[in-house]
Image (cartoon, rainbow, N blue to C red; front, top):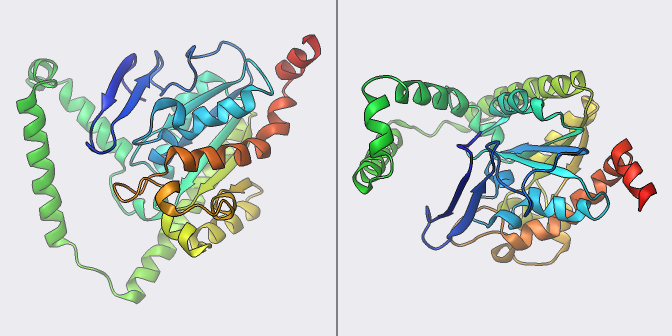
Length: 301
């Protein structure tokens, strides 16, 4: 998913520097020793809430999930296949590309902006494919490798991005309430269709499937979420095992400024992930520990 073998400190937001290491397969690392050769393997797919934007490698949720479940089954492998800015149509592409890792369990994480993100066409995955093709064609194939790490190139990208954002803001008109409801209904239908396609792809691989639902800080403040309630109903209808991560965050009693990276950013904090990981781990524990390789380990200890 990412260029392999990267090791850097990201300072995209100067107030939130964080360590990012990408392993030899293009996934963010989840354990000190890198990838493990033996199953059971959990493929954890989602957006930036899964990748763990603005927290260090081992503070991201897939790494914390590994820490919890790894104590139950030593050779467990958790693959962080999080990819910022993505939604369900992109997650389908990530799944198809990552099935070569032969996961025993696929965990898909929903963030509350995933439905609205379906309104962006073409999808991020398709835009990246076009971008990759351009960079591999002359003259960018010659210019880009030399220019990509220069301050001037990156300053130019920032100027272009700012200009595009301003143009977009000028052309966007807020829809009426009736139009907004109609759009959301259509997007939810599209999400449901893609989710069921995702479920069927996992089933064809003969792997277990779970849907985790991570709330926004607005939902934690409110103590409820219409979006998560809707998706839970969709999951039940489609016979998908779902895990609502709102209750443990609300029950922690911590303010959203502790659970999320507020006021700098709306992504979860290391503390938020730390509260969610055991809750999520307990939901997956039976499926993980009942894997044949894990049961063999327990018998030989």
